[in-house]
Amino acid sequence: MSYLLDTNVLARSVEANHPMHEDAARSVEILLNRGEIVCVLPQNLYDRQQQQP
Image (cartoon, rainbow, N blue to C red; front, side, top):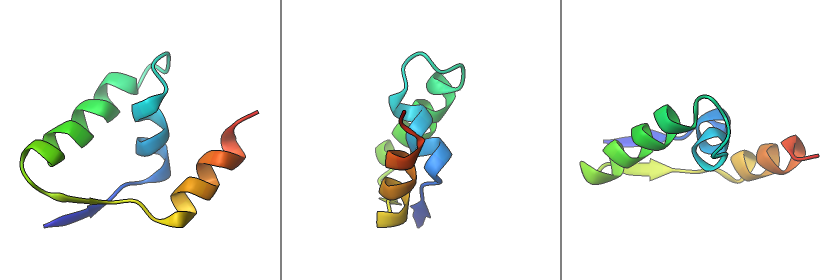
């Protein structure tokens, strides 16, 4: 099965100081370890860029 990563999950998985970092990173890791297809769209990257100060 394939999964589309939400921008928030993507962002939190790389923000080590965010309170949801561990949950987000673990979720992505579980999917990858199960061999699932994890998709990131260009919109996710644009959204992430807009969130940065």
